[in-house]
Image (cartoon, rainbow, N blue to C red; front, side, top):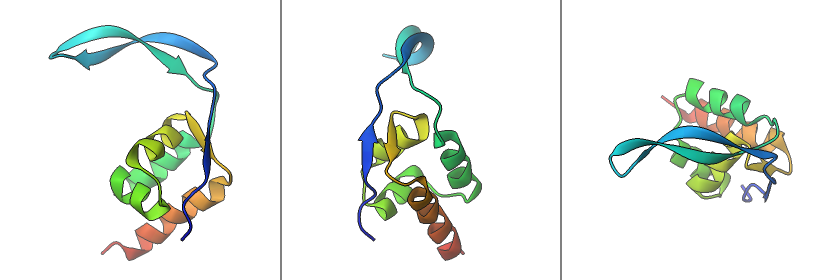
Length: 94
């Protein structure tokens, strides 16, 4: 399979959230991205019990890039291709 082609998405704003930083929970600022099919992709991956690294490897991209897809910071040229990766991995699972 050829690597999944993706592009960055510009944030539409910022929000405050909590994060674990240096052993403590701290309030931090994070980017907000437009709605995408990223949550749907993550739900499909989790339902199929596929790890992020495994999905990324099968798609020919880095785990960080796959995570960006799921959170909306990147979008693939074709969402269908990303879902095909999950479907094919799910078929291979025992």
